[in-house]
Image 1 (cartoon, rainbow, N blue to C red):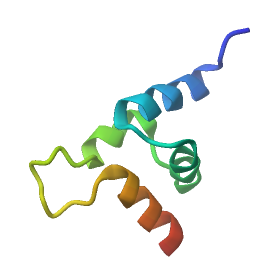
Image 2: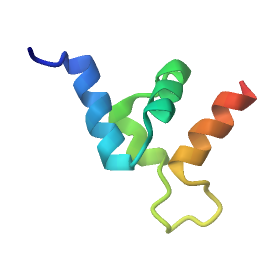
Image 3: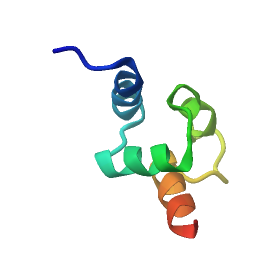
Image 4: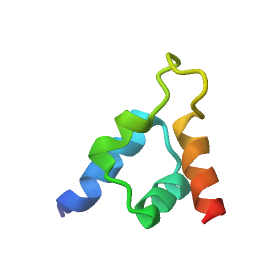
Length: 63
């Protein structure tokens, strides 16, 4: 039983960006593109940015 591609990209993004299942669900509901999460992730080079999990949660609860 193979995992569909639309879910496989979210599984890979979850592992790559260290997100929880709930954060992935929030990102999906917000309409994020899993292939572009690296652009909004904080690579510790931009101290004004929140870490990606915090950013997703803040946007979700604000909405």
